[in-house]
Image 1 (cartoon, rainbow, N blue to C red):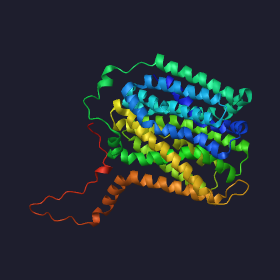
Image 2 (image 1 turned 120 degrees about the vertical axis):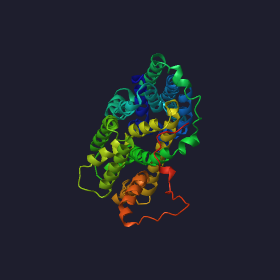
Image 3 (image 1 turned 30 degrees about the vertical axis):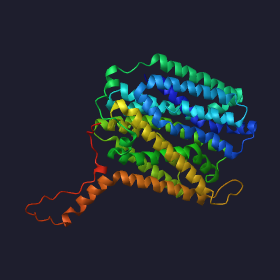
Image 4 (image 1 turned 90 degrees about the vertical axis):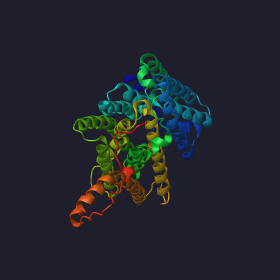
Length: 431
């Protein structure tokens, strides 16, 4: 029930990050310019994000086994089309099919975890899932470069097609269906709509923090970390590749560490939301260290940026606590849509800002990166403040309480405190 879905998520991560390795070969074979390469890479994220909500609904309705088994067949078809493409439109169509086919890989695994694992172990199981899956990012670096030298990019996609078909068959044949009681448990509940998810007070409080931190990390690691290391740090291609490999490795191990930490803290009655906020705070400090050029080894702040990308371990575990397990995939899809949307906006926005400075020999000045990264850090700080507002308000009341005289009681009236329901951490919600 666990390893087949972890294998599917591994393939999804590999497909997501493999473009950096195969782009030079594609540009040479098809004469693609930078804009076409960018479109080819981003169509994956576009399709991936657009189908999160419907796939979540299908996972809740038909179960992870059936939905993921069918979707991976579509991904295998996209890999076949991509590997045998003779034109740019065929490459684009194949990449879009791959994005659609692997779009449910993480949600299917998380849905399976919520269905079959005890609720108190969800964060740890999420950590193992995301750690094993993110090894796909590690595979997309040096191992993929070696394989490209042996069989070329078309042969590589032949291997990926075969692996995707095998994982699809494994999921469909090995994974059991949920017990009937869990499938019908939602009948007596109030239907969970997309509107009700996005308007849930707890979701409104945690989602901006999760989206800002995780989206920023993905945007940096998939594009701007490499550009920073080249233009700001002045690293050559070999040193830059070593940094990127280490960042991918830290991402994988960070997922497991965050899951284990959440599991231990939960046993001590410490909420997972606080650990997510701590990761967000460390990400902000890491970006500040980069922006201010604090004399530290660059691998240290960039490692923290990578770990923040694994914080989905925490945010999906939090969402699993907020909503019924029979409807977990829909809620996860709603949150994942914000992750990918924020990653797209930050990645594209940083590019627009950096372009406002003139380049020299294809390299942009340090000030351009500092300004763009600084705005991203401000966004994360705002999300942290939004999350912490209830505690800040309570602390402020305690701080000024000794200096405020108690109001005299008014006969015939009841004085009630002002309530802000959007910030309430309600434990019991009836759906």
